[in-house]
Length: 328
Image (tube, rainbow, N blue to C red; front, side):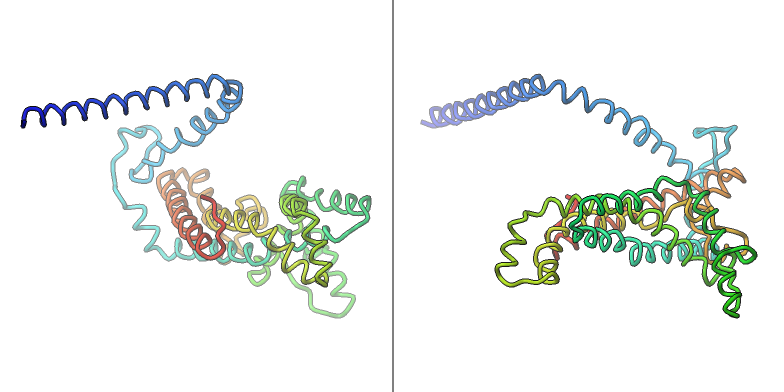
């Protein structure tokens, strides 16, 4: 009987193995059929996959420079290994602490002031009922996005310059003290944030206007029947409809909290405003491009990526637990 029992167990295992193999074969066949059926879509996706592999993943091998005393003549392989030397220098040197502080402050200002601006503008535009007027306003507000930061600085200089700026001319005519907006530590961050809002606010409304257009009009009609005014409609219909897009963009902004915009800051930066305006990106440019210190600049970029990833994962979990909305 033991032999029979043993043979019975062996037979059951063979049956289970055969069934599992059959299921795998059927899944493989169905996957192959699925790929063949959607072959055109995969061919269209191929250039995007190649782009990310060539320009995103392959360059990540260069991150090893952050752990070496890199020399362009010795290359990756022969440059001496220094371990965490550059990271220790970053987090102990007061200069780098100041750079992190400036970057975080400017990024925080962008989240507090630049991020809500297009949301408010989109809600205001959504209330405009004259289609022609609404489209005209949208076109005017989109135009600054297509200007380079060099032109934006030129406009800012025409308005805020101490010698020939329009604002200071008005202040002088009113017998008020002239303010050096562009070369003052007290006003530098305000000028940078304000110019960024003016340039990108209109363009950023596109996403939120699309989210508002996706809200079912019957929800507004039901809210009106229930006696809801404009504010109540915004509170219970408009804002919940905006929430998914708002949360996703906010999470992406938090993930890029150390990327405040190189061109935006660099074009306004001067030696006078280094104390409050120099950020990690501008300092990396001066060290890497102008002075050839590639190892420390790579360490700065790698630390930015790691910190951004940690903040993104933490913010995503927090958002999922509070609002139910998340990136993944």
